[in-house]
Image (cartoon, rainbow, N blue to C red; front, side):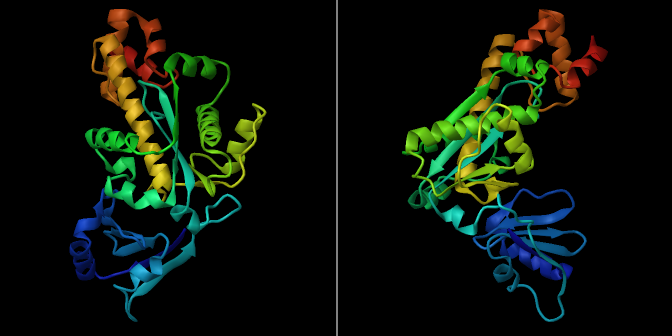
Length: 307
């Protein structure tokens, strides 16, 4: 994905923020604002640098640069055989993403969704976008809207007991994720037919060569026309849909586990999580964590400070 970076005067950056008021997204650390248009994602930093990244960054940048604007960097995202072509985002394609990988409590969920090109605009109108920019309540609502469409998908849940068993057998979380993505995609291909999609896009969590190595250890091969991209949910509506489905499933599983424990289980891996672990150990014993948590996380040891 090409990108351009410029140093732009602060007064112009303020003008830009007003101009993009209706397209603003969550602001990353060190930035003044981030906005997304059909041409590019625009991120303005406090240093004065503004990055334009997307399908047509130069076209968006032209609105703000002049002969006195200093371009600090003009480079394309590193491309390789697994980088998706720009045409993939507007074609019939599969996207897959996961949820729950960094959370101590709850399972890992992976969803692959197939989106036809004629569905892309409708999904955008329904609010389908990067789930990291949506609240949990909005994610649940948008997920229901997705389910009401003729949108084939495959959802897999790796429950904590199985997760912990695989981890003790020597599986890394990376291998678990690779196999979940692989099986979700294959399940979906079996539903829609291998010739229905112009390509498959996986939200990249490891190098493609490592992903291929993970699935090869289980005698599996990568499907044809499979691509990898970091932050893919910001560019592919199919990955965004998969992200929302996976996140909704994770939230539902957390609700079930909270009801089972009688404690509102917190997400993430914070100090609050440590304190909740201690409460569970006191009431149910440490072995009970096997059903609720990824027990190899450092939180298990940290929780003992609260016993």
